[in-house]
Amino acid sequence: MQEAFLYLWREPARFNPDRGSFGTWILMLVHHRSVDAVRKETSVRNRIVAQVEEGIGPDEPGADVKALTAVMGGEVREALQRLPLEQRQALTLAYYGGYTQNEVAALIGVPLGTVKSRMFSGMARLRILLASLLPGDGVIGAKS
Image (cartoon, rainbow, N blue to C red):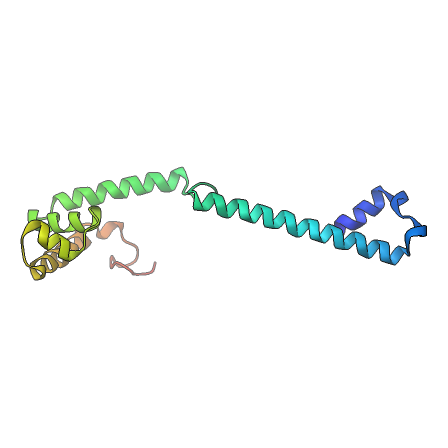
């Protein structure tokens, strides 16, 4: 509406009474401005979605988040080094290597149950070592 009235204010001579009534003209003007606004908004939204899908744009973390992530990553790597070799190996293959527990078992040549035990024990130990980084009472999944 505002755009239509601004147009009317700036271009009052554009109204031609020979082509129709003032009411019809102003409704047509509002309609056209509305369609333009919707098209513009859709265009902007599509551009933002495309940027997000490409990994750029407003949803990309800022430098502060990247710095904190790097610090926390260093803390996690340091804590992993403090685990027994068997636990560290199972967790590293699963979380950094992207292997399933079955694949980890096949890679290191131990039964699946052993891999599960090592990962469970390793995660429990990491939870203790990294308690200062966790929100709330240090329990993963706790809300702060």
